[in-house]
Image (cartoon, rainbow, N blue to C red; front, side):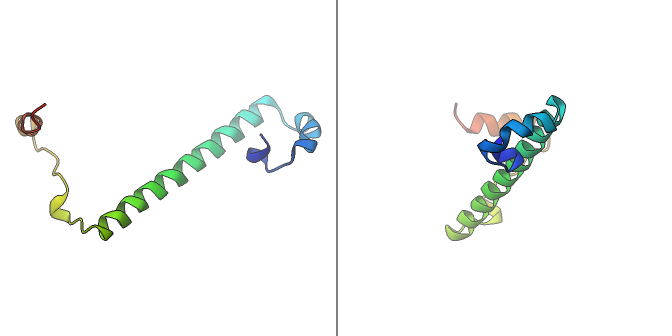
Length: 80
């Protein structure tokens, strides 16, 4: 709670009188969503940088199948 509302533990007593349960839940969900987006962006950027460092090209990326038959062929090629 201290991280979400950017406060210190000694101020939590007044904090509980200032906000309702719904306010707290909403703020926690918003902050969690924001952190999730930030982490996802950092992960995607790391993948791009690692790909550039190790020489990944557009040709190395798997192409999505065009239809069900092609999807089944790609799955069968995995040999699982």
